[in-house]
Picture 1 (cartoon, rainbow, N blue to C red):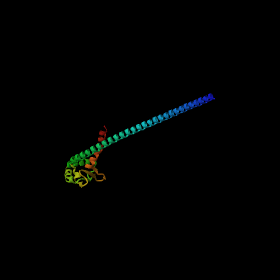
Picture 2 (cartoon, rainbow, N blue to C red):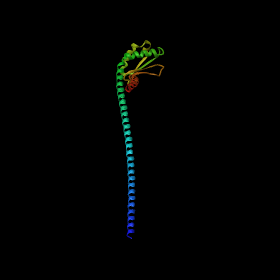
Picture 3 (cartoon, rainbow, N blue to C red):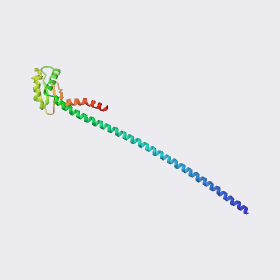
Picture 4 (cartoon, rainbow, N blue to C red):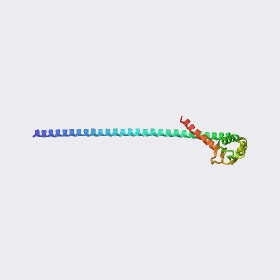
Amino acid sequence: MSQDLQSLLDKIKQDGIEKAAAQEKEIISNAEKKSAEIIAQAKQEAAQILKNAEIESENLRKRAESAVQQASRDIILTLKNEIQGRLNKIFANTTAQAFSAEYMASIIADLCKTFAADSETKLTVVSAVKDVDALKNALMNALADSFKNNCEVFPDKELSGGFKVNFSGSDVFYDFSDDAVCSLLAQYAGPVVGDLLKK
């Protein structure tokens, strides 16, 4: 009987050891599985963090590049406007000095030779108030006799310099006012300035 008891005790002990070993193996397996899952998740999160950082870095680079390009355009535009403004002032001063009464009269005389239909054509000139008397005198010397009696010079408070001229039978006033000449020069200079700034 004691032998049966011993055998039973040995069997219980053996079953306990085997059961404990199986549990240990399962615990280790579960632990390894859980550990692998944690590592995989950590790697996935690290990869996502790295990807997000790369995207943000690229976005920052693009924003910085765009800001630099915008600043560059703003500087060029400001510089172009400043140069154009200074050129406009130079043109205004130059045309004001260039439009002496004698010079205006010589241009009008040339226009008469080119555009006057005949000796009966009436000539109408509009000039700045300050230039009317001097221009009348200069025209008397510059124009052919046929136009001296058919020429009228009127003041225009809107003109600061230069003149406008019309021949009878035409609705067109040829505009040589300082504003028109400055505008023409500015239109020419604008693209030239733009091209210079592009180089």
